[in-house]
Image (cartoon, rainbow, N blue to C red; front, side):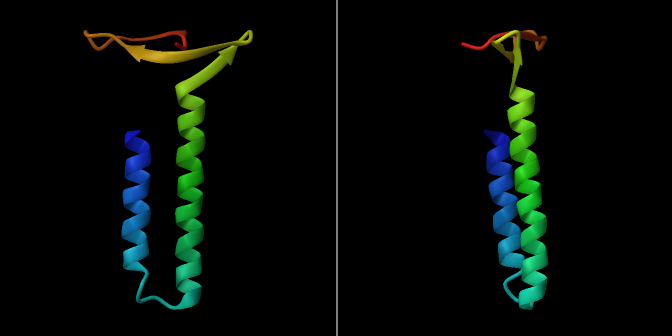
Length: 73
């Protein structure tokens, strides 16, 4: 969720920053932002859930800060 909000904040900041640019500069900035958004989304999907033998596993953190993997709920 935080990655999504951060990505949205970055896209907004770049959009405001490129408002005074020429159209070719805006297009170039748009490609960069689009690539970053796709990369963030792919990283989130791969990192959050993995499938092993048909079972989807997620990472959890307990109250002591230890990270472990278990079947997703």
